[in-house]
Amino acid sequence: MPKSVTRRAGPSICPLLLCLIASFVPTAASSGDDAFQLLKIDGYNGKWGSTELGTGAVVSYAFVHAPLYFAEAGNCRHLVPMDELAKRSGISRTELRDEATAAFRVWENAANISFIPADDPDQADILIGAQGQPAGRAFANVEFQAGSDNGVKSIDQARVCLNPEQPWKVGFDGDKDVYDIRYTLIHEIGHVIGLDHPGPSGQVMSFRYTERYQDLQPGDLRGVERLYGTSTRSLAAEDSSN
Ligand SMILES: [Zn+2]
Image 1 (cartoon, rainbow, N blue to C red):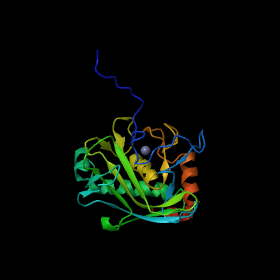
Image 2 (spheres, rainbow, N blue to C red):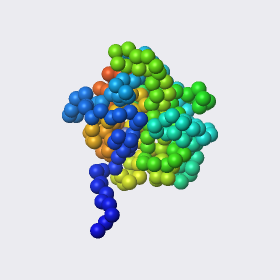
Image 3 (cartoon, rainbow, N blue to C red):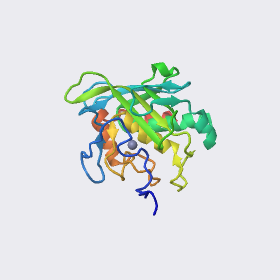
Image 4 (cartoon, protein in one colour):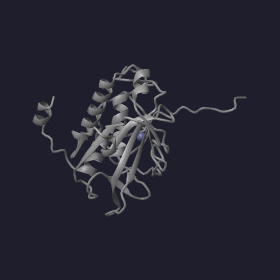
Protein backbone atom coordinates (compact mmCIF):
# COMPACT_ATOMS: atom_id res chain seq x y z
CA MET A 1 0.00 0.00 0.00
CA PRO A 2 1.28 3.47 -0.75
CA LYS A 3 2.13 5.47 2.31
CA SER A 4 0.33 8.50 1.05
CA VAL A 5 -1.92 9.53 -1.79
CA THR A 6 -1.44 12.82 -3.58
CA ARG A 7 -4.64 14.44 -4.70
CA ARG A 8 -4.05 16.66 -7.69
CA ALA A 9 -6.40 19.60 -7.86
CA GLY A 10 -4.68 21.50 -10.63
CA PRO A 11 -1.61 23.64 -10.34
CA SER A 12 -1.93 26.29 -7.70
CA ILE A 13 -0.06 29.57 -7.84
CA CYS A 14 -0.03 29.88 -4.12
CA PRO A 15 -1.42 26.96 -2.17
CA LEU A 16 -4.76 27.89 -0.71
CA LEU A 17 -4.48 28.71 3.01
CA LEU A 18 -0.74 29.13 2.65
CA CYS A 19 -0.68 31.97 0.21
CA LEU A 20 -0.94 34.69 2.79
CA ILE A 21 -0.41 35.07 6.46
CA ALA A 22 -4.08 35.98 6.53
CA SER A 23 -6.68 33.50 7.51
CA PHE A 24 -8.48 32.95 4.26
CA VAL A 25 -12.19 33.58 4.50
CA PRO A 26 -13.84 31.59 1.71
CA THR A 27 -16.76 33.91 1.15
CA ALA A 28 -16.44 35.55 -2.23
CA ALA A 29 -17.97 39.01 -2.59
CA SER A 30 -19.91 37.59 -5.48
CA SER A 31 -19.94 34.43 -7.46
CA GLY A 32 -19.83 33.88 -11.18
CA ASP A 33 -17.84 35.57 -13.90
CA ASP A 34 -17.12 38.75 -11.94
CA ALA A 35 -16.27 37.25 -8.56
CA PHE A 36 -13.62 38.90 -6.44
CA GLN A 37 -12.48 38.64 -2.87
CA LEU A 38 -10.87 41.40 -0.87
CA LEU A 39 -7.96 40.35 1.28
CA LYS A 40 -8.85 40.09 4.95
CA ILE A 41 -6.28 39.85 7.74
CA ASP A 42 -7.51 39.60 11.31
CA GLY A 43 -10.90 40.88 10.20
CA TYR A 44 -9.58 43.89 8.26
CA ASN A 45 -9.40 44.61 4.56
CA GLY A 46 -6.30 46.44 3.38
CA LYS A 47 -5.26 48.83 0.65
CA TRP A 48 -2.38 51.15 -0.10
CA GLY A 49 -2.89 54.84 0.63
CA SER A 50 -6.07 56.07 2.25
CA THR A 51 -8.26 53.56 4.07
CA GLU A 52 -11.26 54.82 2.12
CA LEU A 53 -12.23 52.21 -0.43
CA GLY A 54 -12.23 53.45 -4.01
CA THR A 55 -9.40 55.97 -3.55
CA GLY A 56 -6.15 55.94 -5.52
CA ALA A 57 -2.61 55.19 -4.40
CA VAL A 58 0.99 55.42 -5.57
CA VAL A 59 3.16 52.48 -4.54
CA SER A 60 6.88 51.86 -4.99
CA TYR A 61 8.57 48.53 -5.59
CA ALA A 62 12.05 47.09 -5.84
CA PHE A 63 13.87 43.83 -6.41
CA VAL A 64 15.99 42.92 -3.42
CA HIS A 65 19.76 43.30 -3.94
CA ALA A 66 20.86 41.28 -0.93
CA PRO A 67 19.31 38.66 1.35
CA LEU A 68 16.73 39.99 3.78
CA TYR A 69 15.15 38.28 6.74
CA PHE A 70 11.79 39.15 8.28
CA ALA A 71 11.46 37.19 11.50
CA GLU A 72 7.80 38.00 12.04
CA ALA A 73 6.58 37.32 8.51
CA GLY A 74 4.20 34.50 7.73
CA ASN A 75 5.38 34.28 4.12
CA CYS A 76 8.50 35.43 2.27
CA ARG A 77 10.46 35.39 5.51
CA HIS A 78 13.77 34.86 3.73
CA LEU A 79 14.05 37.00 0.63
CA VAL A 80 17.06 36.70 -1.67
CA PRO A 81 17.97 38.24 -5.05
CA MET A 82 16.44 36.68 -8.16
CA ASP A 83 19.81 35.90 -9.78
CA GLU A 84 19.75 32.17 -9.12
CA LEU A 85 16.11 31.83 -10.24
CA ALA A 86 16.80 33.74 -13.44
CA LYS A 87 19.93 31.75 -14.18
CA ARG A 88 18.26 28.37 -13.66
CA SER A 89 15.33 29.30 -15.90
CA GLY A 90 17.44 31.04 -18.54
CA ILE A 91 15.69 34.35 -18.01
CA SER A 92 17.84 37.46 -18.26
CA ARG A 93 17.82 40.20 -15.68
CA THR A 94 16.34 42.58 -18.27
CA GLU A 95 13.56 40.15 -19.12
CA LEU A 96 12.76 39.74 -15.44
CA ARG A 97 12.56 43.47 -14.96
CA ASP A 98 10.44 43.90 -18.10
CA GLU A 99 8.03 41.17 -17.01
CA ALA A 100 7.64 42.79 -13.60
CA THR A 101 7.03 46.19 -15.19
CA ALA A 102 4.40 44.64 -17.46
CA ALA A 103 2.74 42.91 -14.51
CA PHE A 104 2.49 46.17 -12.55
CA ARG A 105 1.17 47.95 -15.64
CA VAL A 106 -1.71 45.48 -15.94
CA TRP A 107 -3.02 46.64 -12.56
CA GLU A 108 -2.20 50.31 -13.27
CA ASN A 109 -4.37 50.18 -16.36
CA ALA A 110 -7.25 48.66 -14.42
CA ALA A 111 -7.65 51.11 -11.55
CA ASN A 112 -6.37 54.32 -9.97
CA ILE A 113 -3.13 52.84 -8.67
CA SER A 114 0.39 53.64 -9.88
CA PHE A 115 3.63 51.78 -9.32
CA ILE A 116 7.05 53.36 -9.38
CA PRO A 117 10.33 51.45 -9.31
CA ALA A 118 12.60 52.32 -6.40
CA ASP A 119 16.36 51.83 -6.59
CA ASP A 120 16.75 51.32 -2.89
CA PRO A 121 14.85 48.32 -1.51
CA ASP A 122 14.88 49.99 1.90
CA GLN A 123 12.65 52.70 0.47
CA ALA A 124 10.28 50.41 -1.43
CA ASP A 125 6.73 49.55 -0.42
CA ILE A 126 6.74 46.22 -2.25
CA LEU A 127 9.82 43.99 -2.28
CA ILE A 128 10.25 41.29 -4.90
CA GLY A 129 12.69 38.45 -4.52
CA ALA A 130 13.28 34.74 -4.56
CA GLN A 131 12.60 32.57 -1.54
CA GLY A 132 15.60 31.90 0.68
CA GLN A 133 13.79 28.76 1.86
CA PRO A 134 12.12 27.47 -1.29
CA ALA A 135 8.54 26.18 -1.02
CA GLY A 136 5.53 26.00 -3.30
CA ARG A 137 5.64 28.29 -6.32
CA ALA A 138 5.04 31.85 -5.20
CA PHE A 139 3.84 33.65 -2.11
CA ALA A 140 2.88 37.11 -0.99
CA ASN A 141 3.09 38.72 2.41
CA VAL A 142 1.17 41.81 3.46
CA GLU A 143 1.56 43.86 6.61
CA PHE A 144 -0.94 46.48 7.70
CA GLN A 145 -0.40 49.73 9.53
CA ALA A 146 -2.05 50.20 12.90
CA GLY A 147 -5.39 51.97 12.95
CA SER A 148 -8.33 51.53 10.68
CA ASP A 149 -11.43 53.13 9.24
CA ASN A 150 -14.57 51.14 8.63
CA GLY A 151 -12.72 47.86 8.79
CA VAL A 152 -9.99 48.89 6.32
CA LYS A 153 -6.30 49.32 7.18
CA SER A 154 -3.53 50.88 5.13
CA ILE A 155 -0.94 48.45 3.86
CA ASP A 156 2.45 49.25 5.35
CA GLN A 157 4.74 46.82 3.54
CA ALA A 158 4.43 43.85 1.25
CA ARG A 159 6.61 41.20 -0.32
CA VAL A 160 6.38 38.87 -3.28
CA CYS A 161 8.63 35.82 -3.39
CA LEU A 162 9.13 33.15 -6.02
CA ASN A 163 10.59 29.70 -5.57
CA PRO A 164 14.02 29.65 -7.30
CA GLU A 165 14.01 25.84 -7.44
CA GLN A 166 10.93 25.75 -9.66
CA PRO A 167 11.24 26.26 -13.42
CA TRP A 168 9.94 29.58 -14.77
CA LYS A 169 9.33 30.90 -18.26
CA VAL A 170 8.42 34.07 -20.12
CA GLY A 171 5.15 33.67 -22.06
CA PHE A 172 2.59 30.90 -22.38
CA ASP A 173 3.40 27.64 -24.16
CA GLY A 174 0.67 25.33 -22.85
CA ASP A 175 2.97 23.60 -20.35
CA LYS A 176 1.29 24.34 -17.03
CA ASP A 177 4.06 22.71 -15.03
CA VAL A 178 6.29 25.68 -15.87
CA TYR A 179 4.71 28.93 -14.76
CA ASP A 180 4.84 32.13 -16.75
CA ILE A 181 6.61 34.67 -14.60
CA ARG A 182 4.44 37.61 -15.69
CA TYR A 183 1.16 35.82 -14.97
CA THR A 184 2.48 34.73 -11.59
CA LEU A 185 3.61 38.25 -10.74
CA ILE A 186 0.24 39.72 -11.79
CA HIS A 187 -1.43 37.27 -9.40
CA GLU A 188 0.94 37.97 -6.51
CA ILE A 189 0.77 41.73 -7.06
CA GLY A 190 -3.00 41.32 -6.82
CA HIS A 191 -2.48 39.97 -3.31
CA VAL A 192 -0.13 42.74 -2.23
CA ILE A 193 -2.59 45.41 -3.33
CA GLY A 194 -5.41 43.88 -1.31
CA LEU A 195 -7.06 41.06 -3.24
CA ASP A 196 -7.52 37.44 -2.26
CA HIS A 197 -8.67 34.33 -4.11
CA PRO A 198 -12.33 34.40 -5.18
CA GLY A 199 -12.16 30.67 -5.87
CA PRO A 200 -10.21 28.10 -7.86
CA SER A 201 -10.66 29.40 -11.40
CA GLY A 202 -12.10 32.06 -13.68
CA GLN A 203 -10.02 35.09 -12.59
CA VAL A 204 -6.33 35.91 -12.50
CA MET A 205 -6.83 36.08 -8.73
CA SER A 206 -8.18 32.53 -8.68
CA PHE A 207 -5.66 30.24 -7.08
CA ARG A 208 -5.20 27.79 -9.95
CA TYR A 209 -2.58 28.59 -12.52
CA THR A 210 -4.00 28.82 -16.03
CA GLU A 211 -2.84 29.81 -19.48
CA ARG A 212 -6.36 30.49 -20.74
CA TYR A 213 -6.02 34.27 -20.41
CA GLN A 214 -3.24 36.77 -19.81
CA ASP A 215 -5.38 39.77 -18.94
CA LEU A 216 -7.38 40.62 -15.86
CA GLN A 217 -10.84 39.09 -15.84
CA PRO A 218 -14.12 40.83 -14.86
CA GLY A 219 -13.82 39.89 -11.18
CA ASP A 220 -10.21 41.10 -11.00
CA LEU A 221 -11.27 44.41 -12.52
CA ARG A 222 -14.22 44.83 -10.16
CA GLY A 223 -12.02 43.98 -7.18
CA VAL A 224 -9.22 46.44 -7.93
CA GLU A 225 -11.71 49.20 -8.80
CA ARG A 226 -13.47 48.61 -5.48
CA LEU A 227 -10.14 49.21 -3.72
CA TYR A 228 -8.66 52.06 -5.77
CA GLY A 229 -11.37 53.48 -7.99
CA THR A 230 -11.46 53.79 -11.74
CA SER A 231 -8.24 54.20 -13.67
CA THR A 232 -7.47 57.78 -14.60
CA ARG A 233 -5.32 56.72 -17.53
CA SER A 234 -6.64 57.46 -20.96
CA LEU A 235 -5.95 55.22 -23.91
CA ALA A 236 -3.96 58.08 -25.43
CA ALA A 237 -1.66 58.20 -22.39
CA GLU A 238 -1.18 54.47 -22.56
CA ASP A 239 -0.30 54.65 -26.24
CA SER A 240 2.26 57.39 -25.76
CA SER A 241 4.04 55.42 -23.05
CA ASN A 242 4.90 52.60 -25.42
ZN1 LIG B 1 -2.71 33.48 -4.61
